[in-house]
Image (tube, rainbow, N blue to C red; front, top):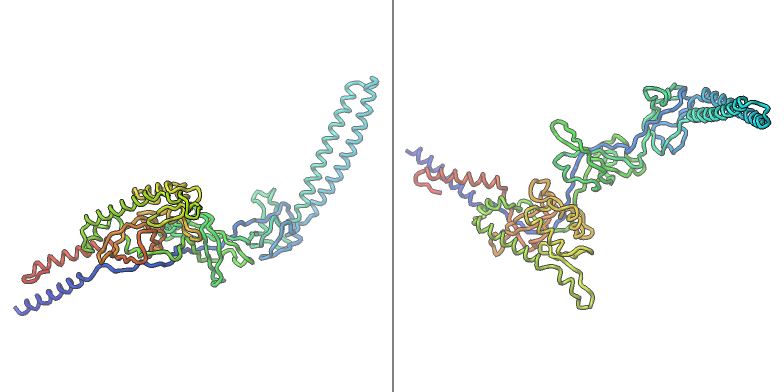
Length: 493
């Protein structure tokens, strides 16, 4: 009997402790403050030359001179190696001699043709003899042309014994020495021997392997900062060139190669160096921001309402009313004030109300166009439903000097990646000490904090709530506690 009483006492203490913990608030109060939001994607990469050239020789033979070594900077036309020129030189001399014979033969044939013409006019020779003289002169001219071509070809072959740099660059690989016998790249089936490899290292590229979860955030033209172990305190700046379409799977991880061009001052970056790559996706300085834990979507407003002790139906009605009021405010602010003249006789700058904020209209953009775009986003399509022209128009509204302007034009509700560039959410704000739902539009987010585009001020306080999955688990635990408490005599919740 005493054991049973003791067991009931222990169980009661445990249940009361659970009830006490359950009574603790499931949310925190966080003030809306200004902060910097910087978003970047990190990856590992390798330095590569933008263009690598294999240097081969069109001439065959023994190398008599090798004038460069690995690491040497060469200029266009600079002599790299010299191939034994004796055979091409002899062929050139023979071709020049044959050319002299062809010229003499043509001179002789033309003289005979002139005599034949005179004799044919006086009927001193037959027509057949005259035609033979014409043919001899034509053959002599053809022979001269063949000799000239042979001399030109022989001159080219002789010149090819001097292998020269095709462009400015750095020798990055050397495969031959003086005395090496090489095969012509023109006549050899295997393509000939590679004498050198050279590359222009004034600009290099980084091939970074970016995880597929981050690849949707990256676009060509974004700024890139890389660091290498050789210069840990010396960052290098560049831009994303392109994203290769074929994924690379390594150890069940899917990645995509991203190429970035880097200006290589003083050739400090060497091919093959490992690099840490940071792609700057977006940046906003000194903007209103709220924790992401305070953001709720339409789907989890109901569970959040239960945590706060609010009626979910009433909360949804308040959200609908606030959205309707926002639409009416946008519809009423058509920029009519901009059409009227100012007190000084000068026309006022036209503005448009964007999420409770007056934004100056750029030249050529009307308030009606902006309102139509935001109405399209509010209708459920989100920012991702906008066309290229609509995104470009919203980009013009971006304040000068700010970065990450895609906050209007990209993202939307959905996955974490899509939410990176903002969307429509609901936050619970303390108004007169009571939690009140407030629809807001967010901008850039670093996955911890999100930029607030409108609807809140620095005087507001928002409530951070656990995720909907955690709320469901806690509600299930509460039900279990109630059931267990109901099964013990004399103990209630």
